[in-house]
Length: 336
Image (cartoon, rainbow, N blue to C red):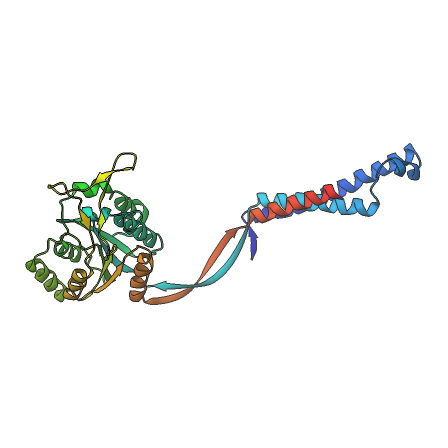
């Protein structure tokens, strides 16, 4: 359905367009009378191209229509359509992100950490009414948000963007998944919304003790309302070096051991699958980063329930089409 932001002024545009048409015909008539007084019409036609009355009518209609269309552009034309909108139950989602130094490996482009951040950001941009939290972990786990939030732009995404290479090199070295599980489970709110934990890691440099796993399992047995997903990232077949970059972003070297040997990192899917089974979660692995988006969306859709259906109005600005039509009419006017 077509409508205008300034609907009340549309009649003025139509009236002015009609007046322009009449003025054009009046001027054509005056010109014809003047030419008739100047000399014979047949003689004038030999030396100049004088439009016929039908061409004058068509040119006047083009000019009037072009002015009308330009006037409607000023009124901001909109096109409204409606479609069914499925209202879904809000979720409480806590992302648990590995920020150990091995996440800087570039077997996933641009690197494991940046790709994980990109796909989390893409998913959060599409959320509506869900609450999200963020836990990061290396040798220790840290909660970057005191509680899950639905303020995606000003809170969650700003905090997520703070995680970069400098942050990774600042946190303690290692990958303590057990500590991350315990902190993440305690970060959920008390609301009745379905709770989903997504832990994303390469599973390298494990600093995990049996006591921590046992404590995590104990907490999970007490809170069966939390669905846990462990997502591995990185190529498990080929070990990759961990580059160092200078301020300009160029590779200046690679991480080395104290003996001067290059450190190589390779994900450990068997270890991550064992952890997922221990805590009663599901495990998936993405070697290239291309499947992360699909994995995240699949996880969330699995836990969403439709609570209602409403008509959703979609309004689109179509001023550009009116402007294009006005230019086409003006071009036709000059061609005639």
